[in-house]
Length: 299
Image 1 (cartoon, helix red, strand yellow):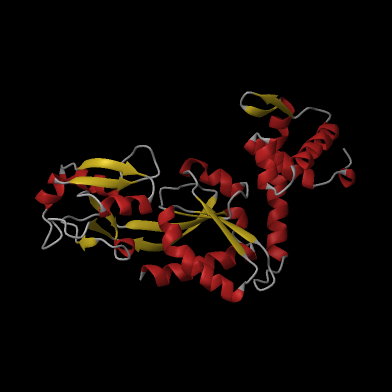
Image 2: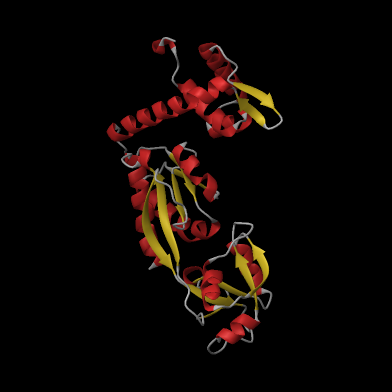
């Protein structure tokens, strides 16, 4: 293979195909047409003299040749990305970059409105895309460039990631206005005797509140578990369920708010990035923007 005759963009397509196993998904991810991705795959097959990916029920499955070269391809792309990132100038005012952020709807609702305002003042052409990322997939998506940054609890743990603590979100108890427990101090006895709503993007697993109660030898009754904070707010408004929620969000909602009758570790937010992007000027700039906005919003 003579490297000067190979289009290096083909290796970007190769990496995306290996990760996504779908021509359609790769086309969407790389902002290409499906025929363009298919054409790139055809050229890759000629270059390697191998099918590389074969259609199966599960999608485009890699051949042994693809399995054998993917590590080298990714290392080469990573090295090239570091070289470009370390030396390229980043001009926020002129940049049209789309930053892809991984965060849940709590972070979106609290940070994105102010982040948009701050970014728009100094970078009018920059756009932000945000969506939820499973923790199990976060490291791979950061490494593969699917997302640029991830905002999550410190449960995300990988040597390949850099991270910075950007804020603490203490909990309170929210309930509908007029709830029998809305006036006066909420006792632990009344808290445990009530039914609760819990927000989690995971199908199972204990949250901060459960861990605190477990340490005290108690357990609460969760009558409803949902994955969205806005949904939880609407349900709490119309029921007698108690909702243990970060204060910074609860105080913006039409709900009664009282103090927790026991100690719960606050929700801790960390910003994560792949170490390959540690010195990238664009990544550093957006990390600074998010950290600055977090200080304003959470304090």
